[in-house]
Image 1 (cartoon, rainbow, N blue to C red):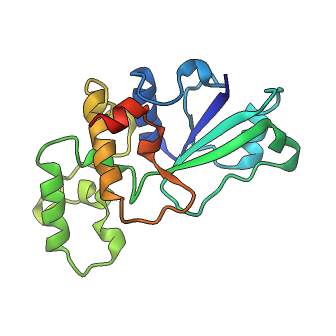
Image 2: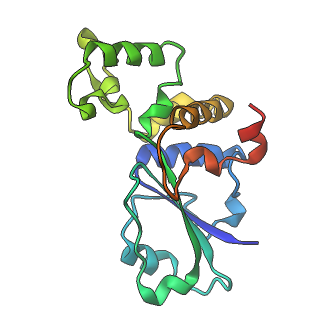
Amino acid sequence: MTRSLIVAEGTAETAILEILLENDCLTVTPDDLISDERVVPRLLKGQLLAEKYLQRDFGTGIDLLVILDSLKREISVPYLYKRQIRQTKYFVTRPEIEAIQLYAEPDWLKKYQNYRRRHHGEEPKKLKPSTFFKASPTIGGLGIKEVKTDSFVRQLWVNRPEHLVKAILHVENDMRTLSLGQREPLAGLLRPHLRYSQ
């Protein structure tokens, strides 16, 4: 059995991955993980990660599974600890994790598309899903400020993991024209029967 460590960029990513783990939706199980923390949030600095999680011998090494929205950012583990890592795999949430949340409610995606049309020509970062969620309803947004919080994400998905899987697959489909290089979409972490039976 290959051991794994999941590192997520932020709170929303961590909550989503924990829900998927709890519902046996990922290619790894809680028993595969080297940490009691199922998903390690915000530990993208290689030195700190190594000091906290790579101090013991894992034999053939671990799989380091990193979830983030960047196509370029990497974790650089100090040379002394590199032998502890069998492989590092990056899973991308593009344009950002909030793209998944757009599929939580039936009308949110349509409202987001209307928001983008209404604000066409503005700089791209103002058209991201997170901006739409936080924007006032008077300008076409949802007015949800806590979109990145653990409690909000769990409220959306904890009782609907099958909908979460479908949302992740929708986002993978939306990303099909993006070049991810050596990285995979978040859907690449889903169990194959979930990914290909939809």
